[in-house]
Image (cartoon, rainbow over all chains, first blue to last red; front, side, top):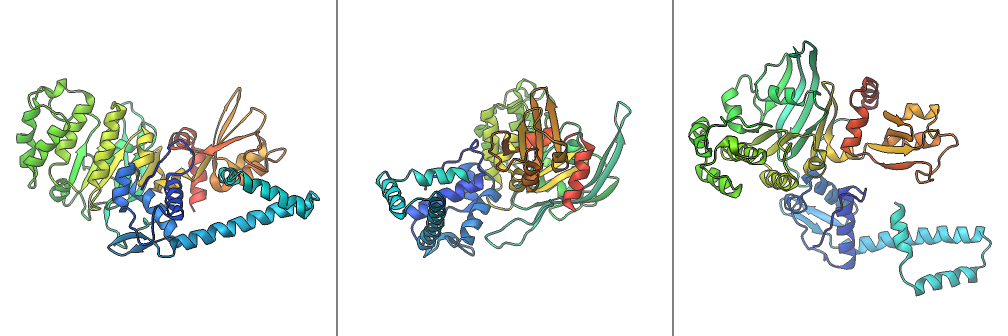
Length: 135
Length: 324
């Protein structure tokens, strides 16, 4: 598993670990049932504190993406990728809802909105990046 | 803001490597002024690293000397791995590994003179392990201790501390005077040391960059009192630093900040994260978004927190309000 930690990004380290594991699960780099490195092992590898890794794992577990099995370690939940996908779909729906509201306030016609969306779908994926930056 | 028990995903019971409660010590310094360490309370669960931070003279070294029985406490309780260092001094000593900011061996000694002196002091001295560390650290037995660099002297103390099965390492400013490579190496050694969950580390430092990565817990001592003790990640999220121009700070914002430095070109304010919204809203005119261009808002790192809180009694009092 690849993890890259920045100490200058301003984003807490546990959040960076969390985000990268989450996207590894989503892209299938980490598969259901696969074990995550042990807390203390990952802490040594990344040279970050044990509690920082614990916090990242705990938050992933609360989202249902990973499961902690007593005495064995932390594993990608069986439905981890589905939970994740559902999360993202919910988020897309609410973002699109916001976009449509804004467009209506601007007096845009439905066809115009569809046209914009088609245009965005054409050149893929600039929108999610700017959304990430906002948080 | 007080210490909460650490999250344990493995469900292990929390044992403590170190518990300190209501510790107090007053004395008169060489220059005739008084110093008081006041109601220090902190807990270090077993298997973790705690950093001790604070400006020089805040009481870090006094606290460490109290833990090591090098000076007698006036009040309070200390428990090291469940034992009181006053009544069970010998047992506690065997469990402790200690590294000071300056070498405690005679400078005229050669490195090889250290083991015959230290080994008999510890029932569980492991000579093979000690020699492994000497090799790993590049310490030559025929060198005179006084001729070793600061980093090498620290490593020699560390080799001793790690060779008698100590369960708690206490390091007083181990990284001062070390270059970045030696500091990285020390951090690796410490993380490796606590890797089995049975060993713990307390180290004081004013090089906060080391701590920001490897420490699980932080205790910040300011003017003899504990300003914060608890998980490091919580302290790192507890404050923002807000910077703005000389005219961008209004009177109404003052209650929402904990520390302030002004200069001719602007100000820097330490704002508790839960007050950030109010701080921005009470600007005139109100700043709705942190990123509206008037202010630069960033997470406050330990250096910022210490710089903007140290020495200010008002800040300490305000913190007590926040805590209660």
